[in-house]
Image (cartoon, rainbow, N blue to C red; front, side, top):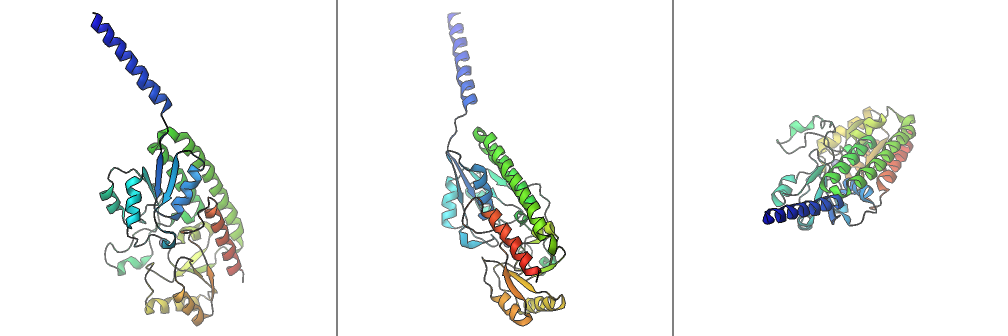
Length: 303
Ligand SMILES: [Zn+2]
């Protein structure tokens, strides 16, 4: 009888202790790893000012988009220490198989989950199976879709780190609202050039173009990181001439040689559109670079 009472008391105490822990839920260190620049900036905005939360970006600033990116030694070290990984998804991170092999226990937040993706243009049949990405993953260049990605990241962080769930959700909602407002602002900026045709460097801009009513007539480099073939340059050259295109858009992260020879042959001017895959690592940098893109487009297409 005495022993039973004692056991009962122990049980009550244990319940009290565990209940107390759950209510407090100590906030531990949270190390977030992101795969590349846009995911890094989005996550920075969500975790801004939170004690004990750090964000590290995997790919080097000079990499640009992750097409054909191979994991570096420093990435593997970062992966070992990470508590959660934020990826763009949609096939942008082709090294995910390797990530899963290295850290099968690591929670992964796919920022594009649930966002319908555009198929890549009709060029994939020319390549070996598996070489080309079937969907265009550059969704972050439409601010409305970027806002959805931010909310997705916020939800993912809340699930991975419940002790800060409310803070993640609130900050994600605030930043997403800012991005939606940015989208409306850019739509107004670009209203005068709606329906214009442009040629971009690689296939980074279809979501941007769709959002603002711009038409992408062609791209200079079909396989990012690979110089376009003579035939591809000749085709683009014909396109520029036949559509009377005045502006070619290069990207700061990629060489401009092909665009320069096209410009020489056609008399078109070269401008820079930034796919926001590198920057000054400031929280505002997505908004700054997107406003600059709109300004450059307006200038180039108003001529
Ligand atoms: Zn790209």
